[in-house]
Image (cartoon, rainbow, N blue to C red; front, side, top):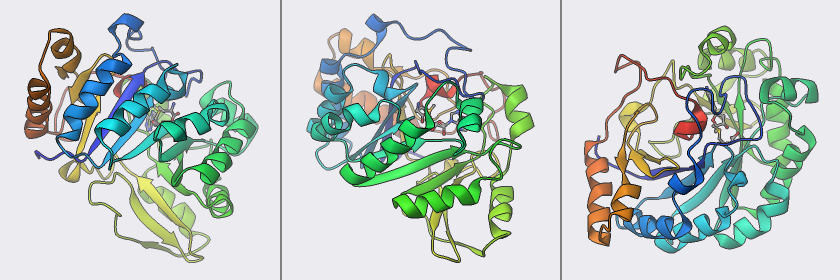
Length: 317
Ligand code: SAM
């Protein structure tokens, strides 16, 4: 592989929700506060990533808005990567109160995760959250940020009859939906096997109402394959299991304790935190990032046997 264009920064693993397929904290305990990267450390790392010319940084978790200094983290990356798109993936519940400060810090885009548009199902899938607040967050973000998307993890018998409701919402709020295949990361194997809906099945369900035409990906490395409905609604399908996109992947991932990885499924990583705390120079940090870029390879179960179980809240989905 050997090219990097985007970075996912997992700022912390904690979440106030408990999605049935994610289960934060189920596989490994959360990183304790002193072991997590500090804002001044993110500032130095952002400069090192900036030297490699990334085009996009996405802040995720856990729930990134639980991080008390997320504005500072975003401002650090804005300074280090002035041209990059800075995005957050969030359940949206804390977004209304922080949106303005996050936008001022440099946030450009948000993806809000909502699995159902029915309050009972939303709670069944995601835990004790308030769907109305999440929907309000989407509308507010659309008014303030350059780009807003919706993540919907499609689950058999839970929300696979709501795909057109999501597309209607997408048209009404002018946001694109990403329908996501459940990935078996080993944290909730029984659930993910039983609820799995393939990308092809999602398209077949949507095509019962209108013809669906494929579009080109906006960027070759984007995880979502794009489609347009007959009535002109654009949406994406992320089919990590049935149509892995490792060949075009340009993502790096940074864990809360500063381990840099080239793949979601990779267990270890290079500790940039240890380098920082050991007195590494800026040039040495840049070289460590470069080494990960050049040795990046896929650990996807389709190509590498022996999955080490993890929760998406640790890996930073
Ligand atoms: N708390 C934020 C949220 O809910 O979006 C950010 C972190 S969450 C781990 C990021 C995304 O991972 C979610 O939007 C959800 O779509 C996706 N996700 C989590 N576990 C998954 C799984 N097992 N399979 C597919 N997608 C998953």
